[in-house]
Image (cartoon, rainbow, N blue to C red; front, side, top):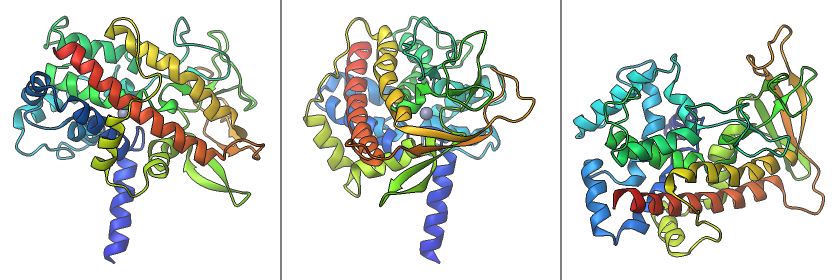
Length: 344
Ligand SMILES: [Zn+2]
């Protein structure tokens, strides 16, 4: 019974956070940055003040946890940190899940993966409240360039908490790139005149990977990248041990150029080709566009994303796990560098 209850709780936790890197992925990004900044006393003091003593690893998952407030005022509590909790509640109230914008919108952007697009200058799937816009917004708040009583109710502590989380999300390929389908259910490159039907960043698709040569359901395509890939990448090893190791070894090609307010777009452009690969390795079938659906407004209802037969390359699960390992490490290093830059 205990075991069954454990599984039930784990499933519930996963369901509650199913739209972002799961708790472990976000926690690792924060933990790597905690390690990278551990010797910088000045920055550590500022972070401690802003986060009321909480670590980056702890706060990394809060932007998902507060989604529980959408329907239940008791869905989220931060015991011992009342002032911080109040600010987070005000943030949710200012950006309600039913509103424009909703705080859910801030976690992703949906750049079409079919063509050869970068984030700019396209418009399909982008918005002024997507992750590429919200990261610089939070940076401006922390720098005092945006007042803390802004319409989004993003105070400096909330801005820091959001940044820690969004730096994780923008390193999850399905948070940046998305597939679009025409009315017949074929993947295509949408345009303003012909926007097609989105797949909600893979949330409407069921992934089938090859296990012993046979396709086997791996669940919701987006959720697979949030959770299962992280488990596949890091296994049962202790998160602190993993974070210490990843903080010690410098990842290749992690450094970004220019000022920090341009980093979000650079990170998006870097991961779009990865998102493209995450889709081109799959075949899309049974795409269900409900009769009467409006292009650009309605999403597909369901569909299958199946791993193509192995042709000399890696299995999808192995490739995805290797990708996630690299991205989480880069996310942690970039988060630390970003905070050193804006909190110095
Ligand atoms: Zn998220």
